[in-house]
Structures are given as structure tokens and as C-alpha cells.
Length: 200
Image 1 (cartoon, helix red, strand yellow):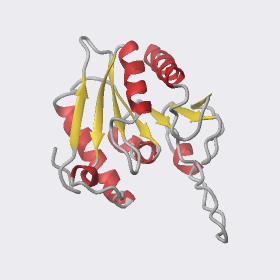
Image 2 (cartoon, rainbow, N blue to C red):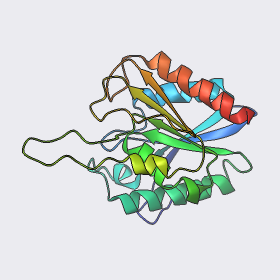
Image 3 (tube, helix red, strand yellow):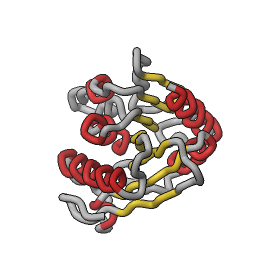
Image 4 (cartoon, rainbow, N blue to C red):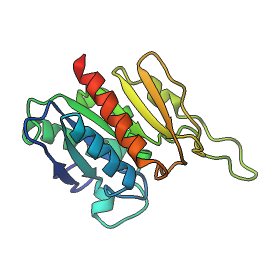
């Protein structure tokens, strides 16, 4: 799909008679085959939700270093607009992703008309580097989301664990930022949260 930042690639994982669609983005240096994204896809399918996995243009172009946030957000919004007009037309859309992809989904939730945001391993605060000042927290990106949010976070994530909130459900699972230690817990968390969200 064409975007202002170049072509993006979308991997559709549809089911018959979906109740909604979950659109997921990848982490900064990874791709859409990350194990926690696969686990989240299984949870969505179990909740009756189709899935679309989005590869950002910089990854499609073969680069590992992520594009600036403004380019990531613009590409994401363009992909969601296209999906909402065609492949996922008339379906409620939940957005999300792992790590960097979760940040993009949060920042653009209003612009994409999402009914919810599912964050896997949200990178709350980058680990402090030797001799450097502490990095700024990204909690404001989560707090700014006006729809229900799920955060699935490893209990030993070096980026920390966001607090739960009025609209934010935080589920800790065994493991670190990769979320690989307990993939079945990731699947269960996504399935349960989506089922509850769609009941509303």
C-alpha cells in the first residue's frame, strides 16, 4: 500500500464473520513474525477478530533503523485509512503493536478512529545509559489515548511497567521485553481483553 513514507506491506489474517479487526505494527528492529505478534493474532482469532499485520515502509525497503516518528505515524494513518475503506470496511478497528509499533498506535489512535489500542511490551522508559541523564518517560503517549487500552508487559521488562488506569488494563506476564517466555499468556490476555471490549 502506498503511504507518504513509501510503500507499506499488509499481511491479512482474516477469519469468517469477524466481529472486528485488529491492526498490529511491529517493533523498531523486528518484523511482523515476532512471536508475541503471532500470539496476539491467535488471541484475536479466538475472540472472533480478523487481524492485519503492517510492515512499515522502512522495513519494506530493507532498512532496520526505524524512520522518524512523524513518518511512522503518517504511514500508519494512511494504511488504516485504506484498510477501513476496503479490506476492513464496516468493521470496528482496534489498533496496536509491539514496542515501537505500540507507540505509533497510541499516538494515532484518534486519527485512525480506533475503538481500542492493544500494546505489547510498551517501551515506557528507555534504560539509562552509563553517564547519561535518565530518558524521558513515554507515559504521556498512553495517557493521551481516549479509548480503552490493553498493555501486556513482561514482569522483567527493562523498559518498566506502565501503571493501570481508568481506561488502561495492564497485564503482566512472565518474561522480559521480548514477551517470549509465556506466549500462551499473551494469547489469553489479548483474547480476554478483546472479548470484553467488544461486549461494550
